[in-house]
Amino acid sequence: MTQILVRGRLLSFLRRPQAIDDTESYRYEEDGGLLVEEGRIVAAGPYGTVRAEAAADADEIDHRPHLILPGLIDTHLHFPQMQVIGSYAANLLEWLNTYTFPEECRFVESEHAARIARHFYDEMIRHGTTTAVAYCSVHKASADAYFAEALKRGMRMVGGKVMMDRNAPQGLLDTPQMGYDETRAVIAEWHGKGRNHVAITPRFAITSTPAQMEMTAALAREFPDLHIQTHLSENHDEIRFTGELYPDAIDYTDIYAKYGLLGPRSLFGHCIHLSEREADAMSEAGAVAVHCPTSNLFLGSGLFPLKALSRREKPVRIGVATDIGGGTSYSMLKTMDEAYKIQQLLGERLNPFESFYHMTLGNAEALSLSDHIGTLEAGTDADFVVLDAAATPAMALKMEVTRSLTDELFLLQTMGDDRAVRETYVAGKAMKAVL
Image 1 (cartoon, rainbow, N blue to C red):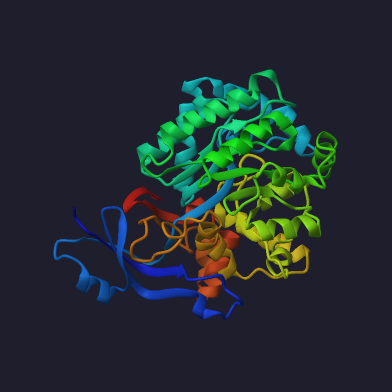
Image 2 (image 1 turned 30 degrees about the vertical axis):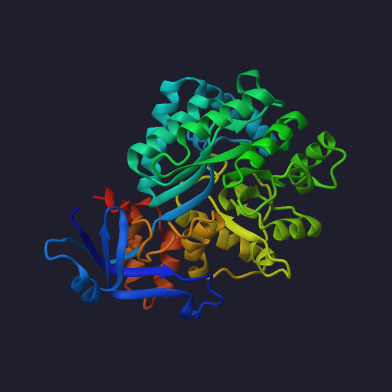
C-alpha cells in the first residue's frame, strides 16, 4: 500500500499539562512529518527525519502552515437528537418530555435512522471529530444505522442501543428482557466489526426499573470489556426524582454501584452535583465524569467543577463532550471555549494546553483507548485533524498579533469552529476539505 507523508506543524500530548509552561507534557514540531501506511502512523517527528524513513514513492501532502493534531474525540452525545438541538425549554426534564422523546420515537424507522446517521457522520468529520461516544435510541434500528455508517467510513466509534422501560412515551419503551436481548444482538452484530465499539447504555436511572437495571448488570458481567454509558447528577429535579424511585440507595451514584455499573469503563454524563461521597466512590472505581459545558449552560443545569474534581486527594477521571442535542455545538473547540468560561465563573483557570489535551489524549484516556487514538505516536490509528487559526477574517486579523503556540491554541478555542478545520483524516484517508 502506498505510504502518505503529511507535512505541517505537529502537536500531540504525552500527558496532562500541569501548568501553562509545562512543555514536557506535549510534543511540538514546527516543521513536522507524519508517515502513514495502511491506516496507521508509521513515524512522526521532524520532517527531515520522517522524510528519510519514507519510501521514495510516498505521496506527500503539505499542510503548512497549519497545525496537525490527533483527531478530536467527543465522549458523550445523542445521535437521534440532531433535530432537537436548539429547542427552547426551561430545564432538562421539560426538554426531554417536550422535544427529545417525541423525536427519538421516529428512529423506529430504519430509513429515517439511516438518513440521520449520514448527517451525523458528516458533522463529525466537518468538525474534526474522528471518534465519538453516542447514545442511539431505544430502537435496535437506530444502533444498526449508527454502526453501519461508522463501518462505511472506517471510523472508530462507540455507541449503544438505549435501554429504557419507564417514564417515557410508549414508543420509546422496551422491556427488561427486550433491552437485554437487543443489546446482546447489537454486540453480536457490531462490536469489533471494523472499528466499532458497543456500549451498554441504560439511559439513566429514571427511565429504567430495578428489573431493567438487573438486566443491565447481567450484561456488564457478561461483557466486562465493554463501555457503559449513562447519566448522573445533571439537574436537581432529576436527582430528587431518582431518589424517590430508588429510596434504598444512599445517593444517585450508589444506584449504579449496586448494579455493578461503576467501573473504569463507565462514562457518566454531567456529574455536576456530586457529593464528596459520590466523588470518592467514582474515584475509587476509576469511573469517568463527562463534562458537557454547552448543554449544562443551555439547560441551566449548573457549573461542572472540572478543576476541583481533578485536584482532589481522590481525583475523578474527566471526559469532555458536546452532548448534542442538549449541547448547542458539534464543535469540540466551542465545547472547550464554554468549559473555559465555566471554570472562570468558578474562579478557576483552564489553560489552552489543558483544553487541547482534553479534546485529544485526555478523552482517549477517559475511554481507555489511548493505545489507538488521541496521539500522533507511531503505531496508533492515523486519525488526525488539520486546523487553521486564520480560517475567518476575524481570526486572521487576530493571528497578525499572535506570537506563541499558547496564543494560537487559545485563539482556535475561543474563535474557532468547523471553519477552522481544513482537513479531517480517518485511518490515513482525507475525509473532507474546507474550500
